Amino acid sequence: MANKTKSTVPGNLSMETELVLAGRDPFRHDGFVNTPIVRGSTVLSPTVADLEGHTGRYTYGRRGNPTVESLEAALTRIEGGAGVVLTPSGLSAVSIALLATLKAGEHLLMVDSAYQPTRRICDEVLPRYGIETTYYDPLVGGEIAGLIRPDTRAIFMESPGSQSFEIQDVPAIVAAAAAAAAHDITTLMDNTWATPLFFRPHDFGVDVSIQAGTKYLGGHSDLNIGTISANERTFRRVHLTHGDLGITVAPEDAFLAARGLRTMAVRLQHHQQSALAVARWLSGRPEVLRVLHPALPEHPGHALWKRDFKGASGLFSIILQPAPKPAVDAFLDALALFGLGYSWGGFESLAIPFDCGSYRTATRWNPGGPAIRLQIGLEDPADLIADLDSGFAALAASR
Ligand SMILES: *Cc1c(COP(=O)(O)O)cnc(C)c1O
Image (cartoon, rainbow, N blue to C red; front, side, top):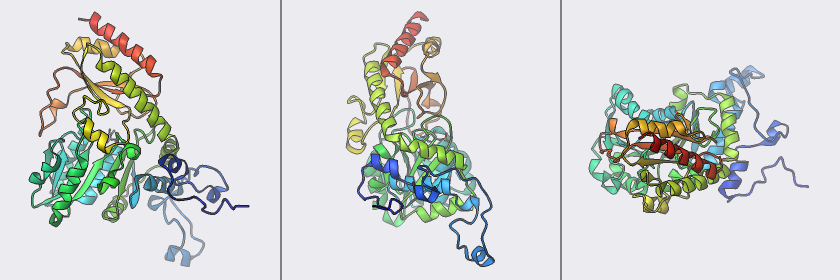
């Protein structure tokens, strides 16, 4: 009889199968399927020789924990890099990745459509450590070469753009960074929207892949967590900085994220199909000026999305025909199934009004009407469409 405690898992598995298996080692835990939640700071050694020789698998809670390590191992397989570290939020994953890759006197190229709090790291934190940021147009493509200065050491991407959904030409940007070989530029990407299931940054030569695991990895709106995956070239720096700064993640949060990971493929398929159905319906509505969803053929980034991505997740935006704020508010207030709240990636649908115009600096945001971001959850899309329909009735009634 085969001994299931041995590592009999074959190579070359599909992503769906990896999601089920990765990071689990049941017979280390008496056969229980999931890695248990292990709480603890102190780890005891049986003898002084063991203590001083670090012979144990773990030395101290902050430096390694079975629950945390299991999720890191799983994500390393999913991302396809050299290693993963976990952080207490998506935003801290961004800040730690930047602190790990840049030092005083160096220059960062940051995409203008980045998640807004990422800009605050660049505008408020990095300057105190002598690091300067230039924002660039998300549509710059290979012309980013012209923005690389003698002191440029990092290029940060986020695709699609936060809220506005511009698709970046990641291969062209990575190629431009590689062509400036003397600069030794690190490329980083916030890949929260696609997740490694729909876009694997390392496969495109991106050095550092970041996820707000708060979103699709967790998937249930019940935790904040961040993940940084780094390739051979960058993992040592990321791992050291993460350890030196004393970053830890609670084992309960690592457990919840690992639990989310197991069902991520089926959830994302449902998010994808429902979001497309809702987006198509919205694009036929007279109240809607434009739908910003990269999987729709009319989206300006559609060709790049189709070339590089394996799918689209459940988040997109719409631009309404010009309407006064009270009418837009009436639309949002009338929605019964779409909650009004930040974040996304959970099982429930959400809507927020937004305006990128107040903070972008390298590009102009002139959408032509009020902008609303929608997260399509796991509800039946027919119910969501009916809900949006009643929202439009409220919009019409308030004018
Ligand atoms: C939400 C989000 C983050 C931050 O994640 P938190 O866990 O809320 O800190 C970072 N990047 C993107 C693209 C996000 O959507």
